[in-house]
Length: 236
Image 1 (tube, rainbow, N blue to C red):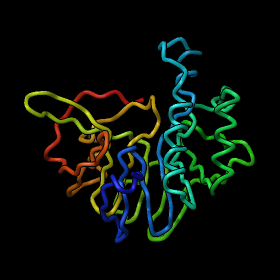
Image 2: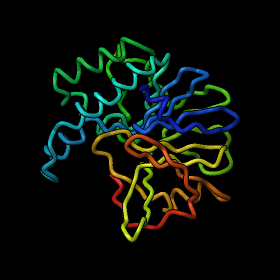
Image 3: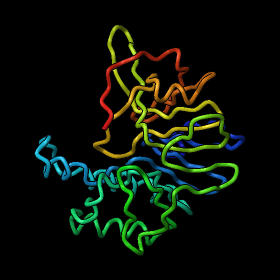
């Protein structure tokens, strides 16, 4: 079963898009796969700073998930929506196996790396294109959403998560956020943190109404923001 078969289809700026349970976005009309906030080498960054004892396998896990989507969907373009690397030295810390995997993936299809706030330095030559944003009218892909009215904006940056209470138990899920005009993707990285979907930093971008597309194990579920609850969440 391909990821598209388990996807949730919805409209944004008049285009039919697929929210995948893996936390990625697919645009069938352009054969475009978008992922946000990979934060590759976050584990090694924390280990070097002695802030947290995280296993240093996040890059391998994230790249394996991305490779599986590319294998299944065969996209013409892969857009990484910024913060693909956790810091400026992340590429230098890549193990040979992970570096080889990136080179293998970027040789298979067109890669576009959008600049984020964590990774202002471009990836090595030969790994694809680098841009501040790309305009694929009627959609525009950038790292962080612009404040104010906009149509067709696809972004990441906030790592949105939805908090719910079901049968008296609270839980959190990564989620897409959309009002039909703009879309914010969840973080794709294995070690990426999350910001509550009701946080004012996010809510101010949707002044009227918006929905959360919750990422589950095998499906995506759509809920109104009114069905969510506030929750203390770490943004990383």
